[in-house]
Image 1 (tube, rainbow, N blue to C red):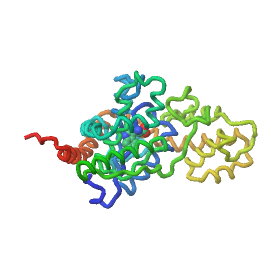
Image 2 (cartoon, rainbow, N blue to C red):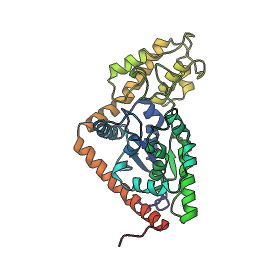
Image 3 (cartoon, helix red, strand yellow):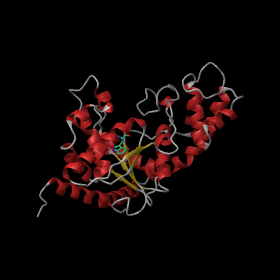
Image 4 (tube, rainbow, N blue to C red):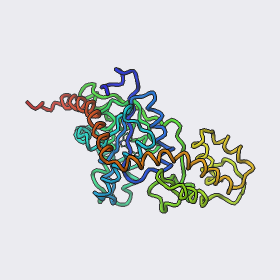
Length: 341
Ligand code: TRP
């Protein structure tokens, strides 16, 4: 990987995902298919952000974190992140992230971090007991992105404020200490679909759902997937058509069908306009199962070969460090930190 995007003529993309649970259809259709697509034209750097995962207030189990980190690596490779085109690494393996976050801590302000909507959400009613890491989360995210001179950051809508903060911090640093950082822009992942929980179709599909019945995991067995779609919540109107507000369950099924068969939602709706909900659910399951099957097989195969996973991650970390280390060095010098003799 070369230093800046300019030297390759391809945009540098950076994105990260927390190892906080098994990958599901929401992650896949909302973000990861976009990550995979971007590899065609951009120089992509993808990170398993374990340092972010340990900011979660209640949910830190060391053995589980280690396992989830490996599992996420297997899943990302299984869905099509290609280590021969892109850089895939574990955030904590590249120590420059933590160090640059410290430098940025001295540029970011208490006020701007306190205003981050995600922090306000996650700390609501418990500010005194959440970790400083949770407060500082967006600063570490800023370091992730700016270390690689990334110009494009594919993220969901909920991350927009964090990317704007990254721009603000980068700009402030450059203004105070000299041009070191490239300012990133958030992009919505190409081909993103917003997948809702099958049981509570007004909520985003998420690993923190109250029940796994509404969440389809990439590693689910075909029978389990069929059962989850069979019991998907719909409505009593009986007509297959797109209406997010009035018919969230049916619309969600159509969105999933469209995304897994490369059609538009309108096309999927037209084709099923005369069907009952039972037939629609069967059609969706019959589209999703073969869509996931090759990814499931590859993920399982990789998950069973820890040595190979570790080799891929070590190689990714080495390539990431080739870009991150000189960037950090420039930032240290610009700030006046005495180079060690
Ligand atoms: N905060 C992001 C999320 O929860 C994950 C993340 C960490 C990230 N560092 C990043 C995303 C850098 C984009 C760029 O989705």
